[in-house]
Length: 278
Image 1 (spheres, rainbow, N blue to C red):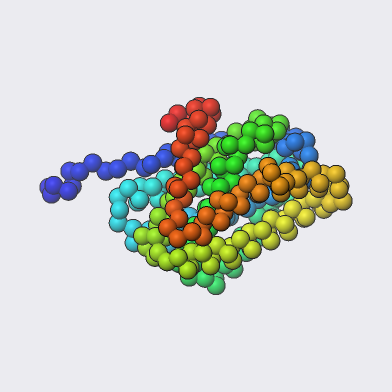
Image 2: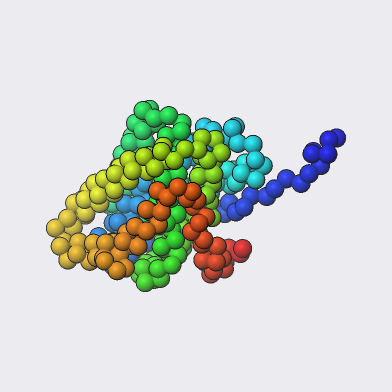
């Protein structure tokens, strides 16, 4: 037996947690008791089942080119976490069906869009798009973990736990796809150009889906709810997206790395709070 064969294999940097949520008792307007904000979170959820499959497929396509044992272990854990996220956000549809919220149609639209993207892009471009979208999810996750003024307004305990569990895990694996991209391809131009294109597509889809959900809910002209929601998302001081602008722009910095935004203490605090351990 060679000396290298006796070396201990690294453990993944983060675990895969098996969850099994049920949302059949969730009230329709479960976030701030408000149509706009509840549908906004539903909107985000509709992106995950096929979105996270796209992430996994993008990494799997180049997995055999990664030789570092630790990164290979982390890729496996990343795939496991994303599979669980897709599973639980698909279960979210139990709540949606109960209240006649058509998330399945939005999921299928996401599927078609990502299939079109896959057809007309290279492996490098798809991995760069995954890095861009993982940066979105990581920065949004950090906001959720920091902003108890937002998260304490989730008036359904199951959805509260779902979103905080998801936020922890997005923070835990936020560097995996980026590290794979740098090891396999690298290149500032592709990384940043794809981020620009992904940003336009992401915001366009979010806006399209939000209008669809509010229209189907009979809330499209609920101006009070629109005003409340837009202030929560884009308010000049504490808007959810307003607070994301700095971390978003940091992605364009040469030498950027996701772990430049240190969330380890935040993750530890929430893992303890939700009983996940460290």
